[in-house]
Image (cartoon, rainbow, N blue to C red; front, side, top):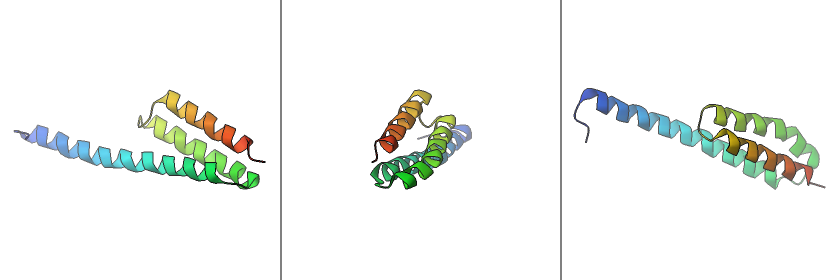
Length: 84
C-alpha cells in the first residue's frame, strides 16, 4: 500500500482514469458491434461517420493505438460496403 500522500493521490487518479478509459473503450466497441450487425445499408451508411468519429476520439485520448484505430475504421467501412 502507498506510504505517502502523493502516491495515494496517484492511485486515486489512476483509478478515475481507468474507469473513464473503460467507459470510452466499451462505448466504441458497442458502436462497432451495432453497426456491423445492421442489415439496412442506408442506416449503416448514416451511422458510419459517427462510429468513425468515435474511434478517432478514442485514439486521440490514447485509449487505443492510432494504427488499431485505422484498422477498426477500415474494418467497419468494409463491413458497411459489403451490406447488400
